[in-house]
Length: 143
Length: 433
Image 1 (cartoon, chains in turn brown, purple):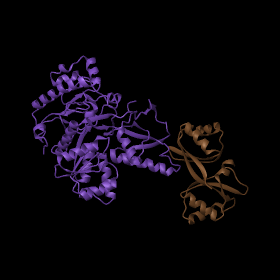
Image 2 (cartoon, each protein chain N blue to C red; image 1 turned 45 degrees about the horizontal axis):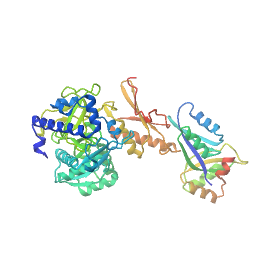
Image 3 (spheres, rainbow over the protein chains, first blue to last red; image 1 turned 60 degrees about the vertical axis):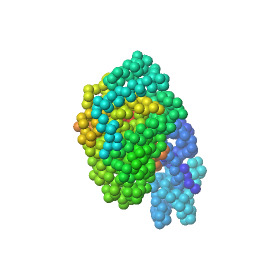
Image 4 (cartoon, one colour; image 1 turned 90 degrees about the vertical axis):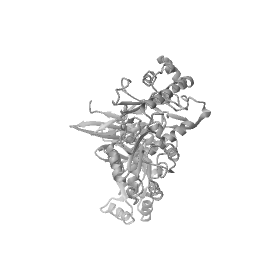
């Protein structure tokens, strides 16, 4: 049920992000979701893409440092308290969110949130037990 | 105490006569047995028989580290391989390792020189000597080990690593002498403290520290924290290993060189001419007694000066004042000597990594600033910001702790650091740009 996220180390310099999007565009890879975390001198770009293997190879060829992590795509009811109910559940289960970001695409009546947990397997187990829908990686890359 | 009273207190005149006799013999040997030296002598038009006085050494060819690499592995051996009983090698951060070979007699001489060194540091056969230099191809471990045994002391061959365990062994065995690098001694001290062991409370009384440059400030810090005498030992694997020179505990002022085995000169690294007596320059060593791989005028790249006024310990040998830097890559940041190799060791000790790094030195106002750029490879990289920031902080703290200099650590993308011929340029000094 996990999804593969790639992460890229970027210096805080003009044109670095543009270089990433150019490489991905040239490799014919679509970006499904992204988040950029930054400090005063570097940033970490996290991406869900249509083909993470291909993206990783292309980016590495261009000299980027690329990491891979397992994340979970959780469907969140598009209503007040939707996200809260899920986080409450995880919190009670002692699972921490390292970071999370919203998916670009929206399913019919729910939003998709990409979450990086400290304990991914336990998080999935807990979510499934509580019937919270998770979008599997293979499906996510194709959305 | 003095281990070899006769030799170590030889009047200078007699010492020099011995050196000349050995130098002549050495020239004959290398000319006859080492193609590299025969060619080098011939190119300079000098014959072994031309050596009439010690000063004539200046007509002989130099040997550089690159010559050792060019003749990797055994091309500079002066004896048949069957007579070589030991091989050591440096890791060589640039390409090929530099190899050193030893005959049985070389190994014996080395053990004796190391025993002399430990004695000069204040140790005796009653001591328990904890050897935390790495054992293996690196000369530190085995060099100290054989010397400690030759001295008749109780030798504990711990080698490097496993710091917490080392602290326990120091406590349990009651070692009185510690041999390691000065920076490791501090790591050991801190780790021991965390484990509830205060080295100051243990019987430990002497530290024999070498294999990396260190300052008097660091010595004072070590002596104060651990309650020991910290003694500087000098050596380099190319000419032997640890024990080429040693400070005496009486003066703690410059390493006495083992001049019956090594002819030491100081030259101007630019002109390559000898400097005036007592002036600062690059130390050049000729191995007078080495059999397996003797070297003529080996350029150590260590910047120092020689002091020949009699020492209060009674030894008549020249002392080299603490190495003041290298003729290659030393930096002085706000009065502190910084070597790229030290930063490298810190990176290695921080996360066990060997990333590309570059030191950028700038001047803001009257103050020098040091930025250490570290390339983020896949081993370091994390998708979590705080992990990377923690790494930056840790490196910064260790640099401050080990080198006593505040540096800004900056993570950069791979290949952000310029490479020339595949090797990263370690230092970018923009102060005079």
